[in-house]
Length: 110
Image 1 (cartoon, helix red, strand yellow):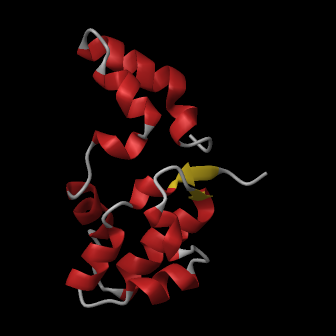
Image 2 (image 1 turned 180 degrees about the vertical axis):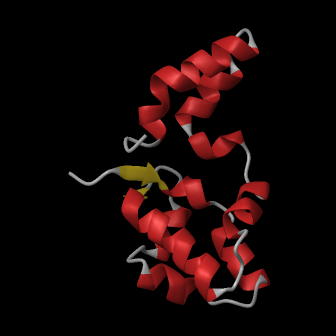
Image 3 (image 1 turned 90 degrees about the vertical axis):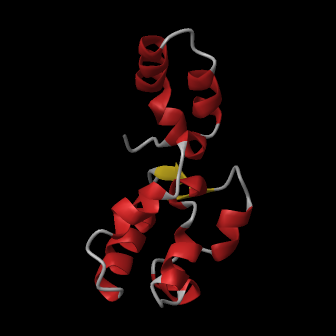
């Protein structure tokens, strides 16, 4: 079974690509990702496809810091249920231990 990651991992992607003058639908199609996956909060996409999407976008848009720009648009919410568990941890240390223990819920490839 291929490693999967929550589609939320690339939340903000379509808007960033559009701002940079690109066509997000074309790039998603080239990476074999359905754009409707972003409309479903619990959807998963192939980890390899997500990596390909980010690399292809950086290259095609001539934007070497594409990943950093995308990260600026995101918050802990991209982690889904893991974010909830982390937010309700008693301390920052407890939140980090929680993340370390359950990161596979977010991305089995990690």
